[in-house]
Image (cartoon, rainbow, N blue to C red; front, side, top):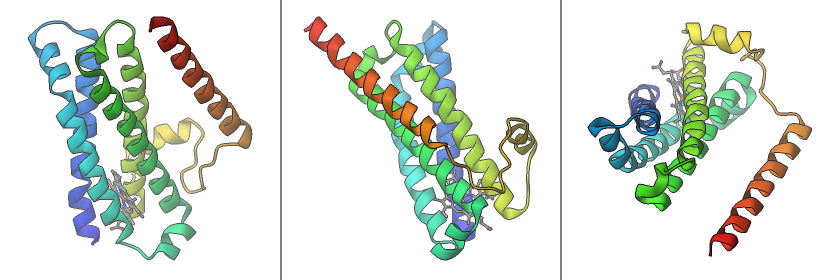
Length: 183
Ligand code: HEM
């Protein structure tokens, strides 16, 4: 199953990279190519999610679960795979619901910020996959410079999680208030 995983993970990584570029280009550029980037983003995002599901399922079939859970490196790899899936699922929902208006005005910056965060996460997931195989890259050095030693389990302190939940609730409340004001 390892060989299948190595082959399948090219799909989410390639579609996520393409979607990130399309969002950045569509948000800041004008002209035919920018229009095409915005108009064709949804199918690319949908394909990326299908690819991610295939990558994740095949990933879980490589090693027994005990091995995955007892290796900090594998745990970090799984964590980053699911964070990437979460961010790109959010982007897909926003682009789906927003339709042509998803890039209107300041809305585009929500897509840009999510795409940049997602880009960082999927690059880290792929880099950690390389570590699992024993082939690290220069990107690992960057992660190390940022203070994360990838051979130990990554965790967010509880206060960071609490702040994230509060920010999420505040943004949700802001969205509901804005919708009521507009409606
Ligand atoms: C979209 C999600 C994922 C991506 C993008 C991804 C990416 C990668 C990459 C790039 C590699 C190195 C392969 C190579 O260099 O040819 C790898 C290896 C690996 N991945 Fe994933 N992965 C994902 C999800 C998962 C999940 C959920 C698991 C669950 C345990 C997993 C387990 C593994 C293992 C065990 C290896 C090492 C395989 C070996 O030793 O041959 N992956 N992954």
